[in-house]
Length: 373
Image (cartoon, rainbow, N blue to C red):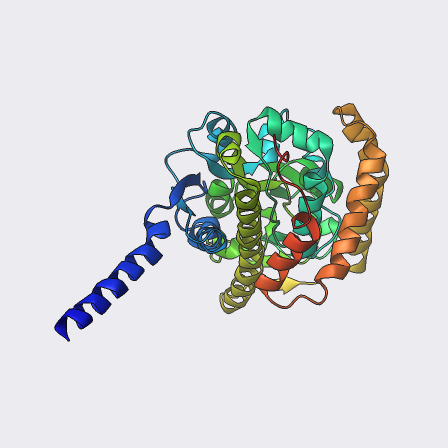
């Protein structure tokens, strides 16, 4: 009887060990999310991707993120290319010369307001753009998708209802189309890292920043911002994360590549919703702190809309001057994708639904045996 019990226990123990073996022997991807341990990429997006990758590969692959220190965001392009890290976050405007075609989306960041649709349109555009794929290949990387922030607003120390109120006001911008927009509205643009916004506003060097209202929380601006004017014009949509080093990608078979890209959609969606959740928190806490949220005068809304139309009428020429070929056709394709995804996300109610929708619509039917190579 004892022998029978011992054999049963031994058999069960062996079964447990065998069940755990894939996880114990899992191949670990060296990732650098890049924005520090408190950022949503480190706290939510990359951990979510790791969990899903383990799930989709039956424990054969997992991810270990080093949020900061190993590579800065400015070093990421070379770091991924040279194998310092195997996975990381690429901010394309930081490497404009390397991503001329892919960064087309940044010049169209004033198209749309729903970051779920915008990020998905960017992902489909770049994933199906031969010239974009050639850029990532040249830099030793494989593109898996993008996220996007919530819309930008005017965060200021003085109330802005009209363009007259903005006239002469020193406003920090993130560059590119945002700088041109604020200047067209009458502001004086200032280039400054996001890490210096608080000091700029508190010292009076700045009178405002053109950012997402979520930055009230992200940059702890509750004590220095007094007003938020809801312009709802533009998002940041020019990130590529998690980009994968070509050396890692080449070690994976087609099934593993699909698993990785499938898991990546969950990471990107976690970031998309992270921005939405942070905006809700920031708005609630901002109101408690006495910040006034302003609906701009019709004249300012009309001027913002006119800027958008003028920009879209000339953006193809701007892109052609930068080396983008057939720019107008590409602009039209991107705008059509935003419209497409506005419709697709209308019925989405959860993060998992959006992640699965993105994978199904963009990636599931693709042969990844040659993708990125």
